[in-house]
Length: 127
Image (cartoon, one colour):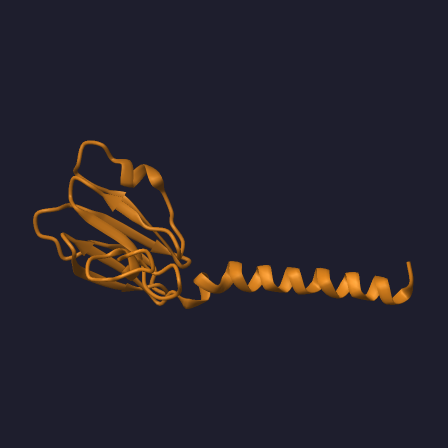
């Protein structure tokens, strides 16, 4: 193996590692807000940079959110299953669903943003 072969292999490995890092970290850099939807309507927008507990503007539901370090989780809910509470923290690219309350929590922005999954948005598989 010549020095040129080694240099080519090292360059290829560096290219793959840099590409993987850009692809992996892109959704984290793009998220700007946490969105809360109920019945297909946006009921709250919370900045990703905020910290603390939030009660979205839903008068009959007792859903409590905690935001910290760019992540969000549902800490309390009055439905029976508590699946959304058990899921724990989500980061940009993930979302929480409370089916009994018809509430969706996720992030805006980036290719993994929540907006692409909600009504009125068309993806590449829609005909």
